[in-house]
Length: 175
Figure 1 (cartoon, rainbow, N blue to C red):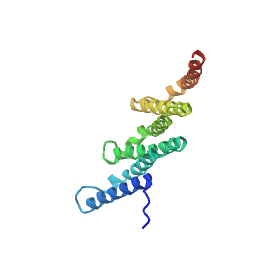
Figure 2: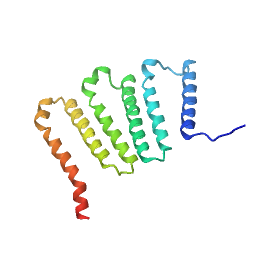
Figure 3: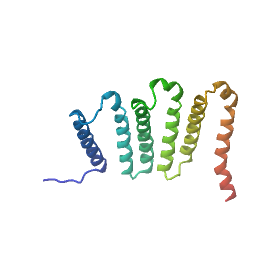
Figure 4: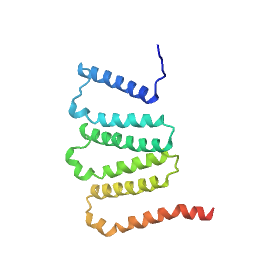
C-alpha cells in the first residue's frame, strides 16, 4: 500500500469541505434556521479563506503574496454581503456603501504587502491609494456630502501620493 503524506493545501481543503458538509447536513435537518438567501455569502468567504490558508503553506514569496491578495478580496466581499443578508444593512444602502469595494481592494493590497514581509513598497502605495479612495468616498456619502466638493479637492490626493512616493527615497538619502 502506497502511503504518501498529504499536501497541506489538500489537507486544509479536505477538512474544510468535511466541516462545511457537516454544518450544512445539520442545517438541512432543521437544527439551524438557515436559508439560501442568508447563507450564500459564506461561499465566497470560504473560497477566500481556503486560498488564504493555502497561502500559509507556500514557500515562494511571490506566489504567497498573490494568493493573499486573491484570497482577501472574496473573503471580505463575502463578509460585506453577509452584513446585508443578516440585516445589518439593506440592499438599498448600496447607493452609499459602494465605496466599500475599493476599500476592500485597499485592504487586500495591504495584506499582500504584509505577506511580502513589508518588502514590496508598490503594494503599500496601492493599499494607501485604494484605501484612501474608499475611505474618502465612504465618508462623503455617509455625511451626506456631494461629489462637487471632491471635484475641487481631488488633486490633493495626487499631492499626498507624490509625497508618499518620495519619502522612502529621502530616508535612503539620509541613511
